[in-house]
Amino acid sequence: MTEGVRPATRGPRDQDLVDETLRGSREAYGLLVVRHSRTVRALCLARLGTRRELDDIVQEAFLRAFRGLPRLKARDRFAAYLHRIARNICADLLRRRNPDTLSTDEVQLESPGGRESTADLRQERLSLLRELVGRLPLALREAVLMFYFEGQSYEQIAALLGVTEAAVNQRLHRARVSLRRSFGLGRAVGQGRGQGQEEGQ
Amino acid sequence: MSFKDSDLRAALKDLAGDPIQDADRVLRSLPAPGWPRVTWWLLAAGLAAGLAAGLLGGILLSDVFRAGSGASKPGEPSALEAKKRKEEQAMKEKGWGSEPVLLFSLGPVSVTEPGAEALPLTGSWHVAFDSVFETNESQAGMLLPEDVQVRLDRDTVLRVVDHRSLILVRGQVYLYTGSQQDAVVAVETALGVAEARGGIAMVSCDSQNLEMVCIMGRGSLRPKGGEPVVLEEETVLQLVEGREPEKPQKVDFMCIRTGWMSELIMLQEDVRELHYRIRKLVTAYEDGRFRQEATVEIRKLRGHCVPLLVEVVMLSRPPNDRSLGREAAILVGELSERESVPQLFRLLYSTDPEVRVTAYRGIYRITGKDAGTGDKFWRSQSSPQEREKVTREWYREVVR
Figure 1 (tube, rainbow over the protein chains, first blue to last red):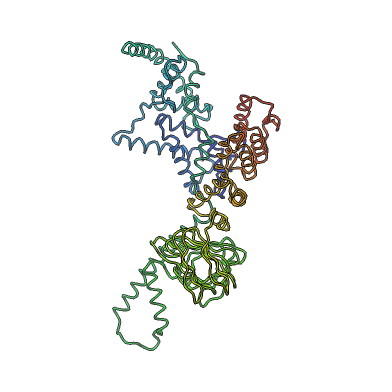
Figure 2 (figure 1 turned 90 degrees about the vertical axis):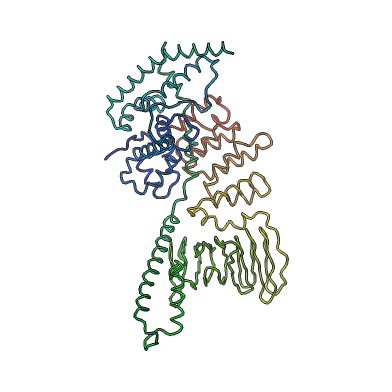
């Protein structure tokens, strides 16, 4: 028996929910959405950054997945199938945004509410950290988002990204090193910039 | 200058969406499951087959003309048969095929095609014009050429002469006159003729009564040997045998009259009508004037109404709306099915303890999991922070 990419420890298996969906149960598909929407969001965030239409993209991914369900032969691979759809949607969007390149080098990971007031020191630190995560290379950014944002295990991330657990470990390590280095630099630059602005006022 | 892992988690936390809301959005936009999807394919296949048949017929006819002598010979079709073939050919040329009625029935419907015996049909079927449909215990829908749609209630006997002309022996039908502007569909009955023009109407009759409801567009009802009476939108006119027709009356709450179609509406692939109906019903429920009637109709739509009802609960403000909120919460709990569980979780955040208890019971009933709590916890023995914590853990337990 082959288990899905992200086996459910509790509740029905993805495969069973897919079968129920195909038999006409909308509730089963609702549970699939609830179960996987955060991962899809993390994947899209890694590629696009926080954008206002992120909700729409997540919705579109699940809608396309729903429409294609009758053609999904490996029903235990729903998560992988869904993630492929989400990646394709992101790629299409990036292509439309910039037809010449398919750049995912850097994204703007701004929170939905926009930038917080820099009056709060902690919020400023978090905002900078988010920005730096957005500047990581895609492979590292994906791993960081899966691990810190989605709370997935190494094993789950490895299965999702199609790499070994050791590779996930390495990516996270490299991401942390890169973030720590940039964080110190960014803080220094940010403070300097903040002072300059205040002076300018 | 450094940061901790917890900083990184906190930094990314703000980016999180709400899986419950994601599920709501996706479920709302899903096409309704079931047979209509198949039947649209069948319709497409039927049209393709019709076109192919027309093409083949054209080729054969051209062969006949090429070899044609022009004179009648023994064994050639009679005038009647020739006329029938001509009509069939005309229908084929229009792409309708020889069986232009596409029937969807929820249960066995007795169908009698011209010159054939009655057959009990269930599901989706292509049927010829001039057929008689008897629904008995079932309901049915029909797609006719030029987008004309007909729905048949239980215990209805209808003859479809063509897509603009129907004969209603008894029962109730719903008519949509199709995509052509000001198109007319006429329904002949024993007591008179009802005509729907450029819109939607319902016609019902028995041996002594005839009633027409004009939902959209205009309609007219002409008693046998009398003058037609015009119906405007959202009006109803009843004819009783042996009496003069009265003036059309305004229909206050149309959803009651169209309630018999709930099952058919839920099964449609196009969800616009369903969503429109849900909005109308929940608005009427909230408004209060037709709350009882709306409740009856909402129950027919089952879990479909839950998301909007949850909005009613969450937006109701005590003390004035408290009873409305609580009543709606009870209705939500009653109607909720497995797919409504995310909606019920939203109610756990209500400021009204009774609403929280109702939601708690609903989730427990559907999932069989109670988060180790009871009524008292949700009613009084907990702080918002404690409830928040339990809700999150329970939610993970239920949906993961």
